[in-house]
Length: 151
Picture 1 (cartoon, rainbow, N blue to C red):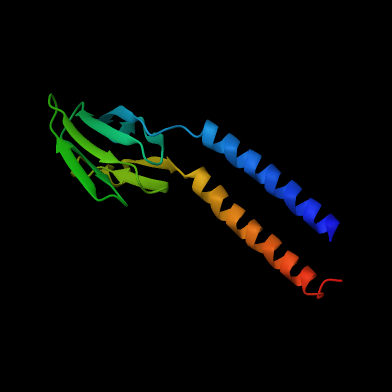
Picture 2: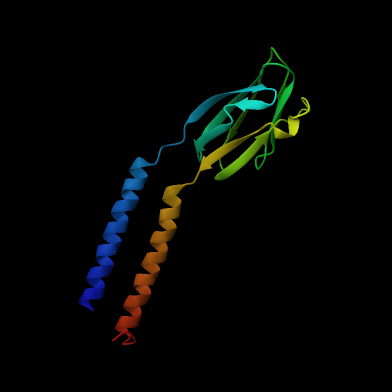
């Protein structure tokens, strides 16, 4: 009984310490301004990495012909002609890897004009779920032990 209790307390303290570290190291949501340069048939940058909860302001700047920007998963669309810019503002509220592509036919290789928005997961939430599962398991083990089923 004492071994189970000591092991459970040790695991909970270690998990609480790790959770505390994750909360301290998890960056707070910020506003990010990103200039997306479009030219036949590529975006620069073609990979955008942000944290979940960040506010994004993406400025589309075409260099040669009219280009568009469509972000799958968020259903955000914009387009601009050379010499002009287009801006979209949104919150990166969904974790995952989302393709963005040109939404204006800009030439023969238009279908290959793509990039990626990578939105990092909410690590504290994931760790919290594991902590609740661990606590539930320890509670079940303790209850079974007290009831004489694990002796």
